Length: 317
Image (cartoon, rainbow, N blue to C red):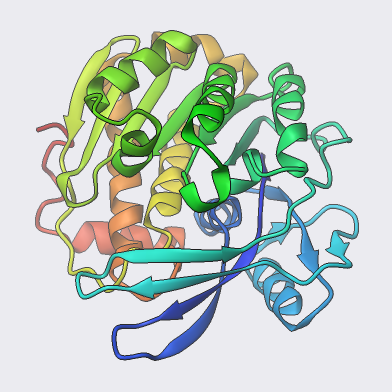
């Protein structure tokens, strides 16, 4: 079972023609929903308000089988992010976010074997100050993943954000970041060098997504480039979160998550990672093919993958 810690919010998506639509969002919440749709049991430690947007989020989690432990309503309004969609489908964000990391004072829910965190909630005070200690405690009972999902407008100066990101990288077994994340955290440094330096901090696997260019992957057994999945992009909202959910689901299917499988994860060959990474790329591409953060169910994914002409191809370039 997965436990995800982080922010929930409502994405108010503004299309190029000015249309506005409200979608449930928040990077960790998107990962939780993606995992649940792929068939996993998921607990989400988050914070929502007792307002219309909060009820929208709670209904969304209930409909997708995401478990919310204990009452998590906040006296503050539910957080929102305005996502403006450009002509290429790429999204830029403006945030109104509140986060106090409820649930971090408790141990992992019983049965949890993997803990995931990331994005704004892992750094934004006051809640972000609680996250590293929670992750460190979780490592004794679960494998750990982390996605920095950088939002410069909310994360302060890069000089102060970088060591906090690297502390969480060092505590994680699996790390996923985007090329835009690394460009902000380590400007003028090739992403391959940053990924390698992060691997040296402790993880077994570091994946850097690059949009239409696929992804760069580095592990203890070597590095390779992951080929992109061709798709007609409607928008990219939630694409990175869908990739993270697909990757974790693929690693689960390969028996590489959980504390009992940590040694296998760190000793895995490059070829062992091909199927989980291919699954991640397919989940992300599917999400880009429809509006908002709307990842596939396991049945939708299997049908879509089976129908694709490129299905037999290798994930490697």
